Amino acid sequence: MISREKLAKLNEREQQTFYARNPKSRAAFERADHLFGKVPMTWMNKKAGGFPIYLDRASGNRIWDIDGNEYIDFALGDTGAMAGHSAPAVVEAITHRVKDLGGLTTMLPTEDAEWVAKNLTERFGMAKWSFSLTATDANRWAIRLVRAITGKPKILFNAYCYHGSVDEALIVVGPDGEGMSRPGNVGSPVDVTQTSRVAEFNDLQGLERQLKNGDVAAVLMEPALTNIGIVLPEPGYLEGVRELTRKYDALLIIDETHTFSAGYGGMTMRDHLEPDVFVIGKAIAGGIPTGTYGLSAHLAEKILSRTDLDLVDMGGVGGTLAGNPLQVAAMRATLEKILTQENFKYMIDLATVFTDGVNELFEKYNLPWSINQLGARAEYRFAKPYPKTGTDAFHAADPELEDYLHVYLANRGIMLTPFHNMALMCPTTTLADVEKHHEVFEAAIKELVAG
Ligand code: PMP
Image (cartoon, rainbow, N blue to C red; front, top):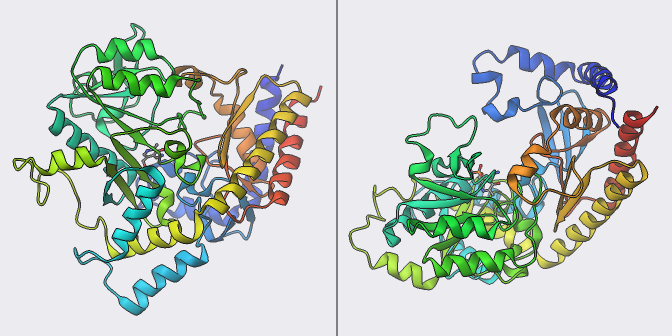
């Protein structure tokens, strides 16, 4: 239905507009000779327009680039800024720590930490918490702990999951139904099938087949896949996972770094999930680096009773700056004042308006695309119905089309995250912002399908 020739022409035109709108960003990128890949972190080369937009400043759900362009930001740092950029309560808390109190990294606890842990318990139900600087690290440490405590060597993942740069997680289902290294896996220490097993999301039979091997310490999963579109669980799937993990004596680690968008207590609270270990990062410190894992009371006790495990020095769990006073002050302010029940309700209602509007446009223009909502976030995929496994969702990607929509929107002041067709609402996103998105999105579609 969509002419590829036309898409290529439109992409070319939008590319030219992007160049014309962003001369300063382009020049800065060209000058960046000392950065590996010309960017501060190699992912920033995932850029639809040929070079990244350089940030000047940001506030709430607005970003301004160094060429003076303003954007409504639906990317929100790919979730890290779900509380909005530089939310005043976070700025106040971290400024107080930096300017009035001092002590950014001391390896000493502050009293905010217990407040944060108690709040995390209220939301996610785990009894004991420990902090890291990224969700990646929280996952790595959780993996070490579950291997140590179960004595089993393998972790089971869903195909096309993402849990950070975690060696064990880079596994997909191969043509024979068994695990194989995820394409592009950089320098894996050993063949990933030695450390990991894999099943498709929403496939309980596949999961059981893998668990039957008896060597799985834990299943580590998102309760909805969010890094390959948003693949939602089918009715009964998450209950089935919990039953099977119990049946085969494997622990369940739930990573809600992204699915936290589902609400105040993530999907764990909303859908009454019962993880043994819980991981979250990104959004909960309002943009300051953070991560945390929570343990059930039983598991925490069991781990602490193992005197052979070195948890207080170089046993492989923990890090120098983790739990630092700045991070913990930022988490407290974000959880206490911003990512509240009330704000979640507002964000989720707005995401529903976003989702409904996009759906209407897909129908109006008869496009075989679909969108899934998970609380405050929504993401569309170029397939209908929406894929139910990571592998199917992977095959529903269309990079050329994605580039077109991303650059078209960026050229008209709307930012989506470069890795996704995802829109996330923060407490300062407005109905007018969502309507503006729909207006521009419709214009992009109209040009694409016009005869
Ligand atoms: N878990 C999930 C579910 C994620 O989506 C991500 C990042 N996209 C991570 C963990 C890792 O987060 P970070 O890059 O901050 O370590």
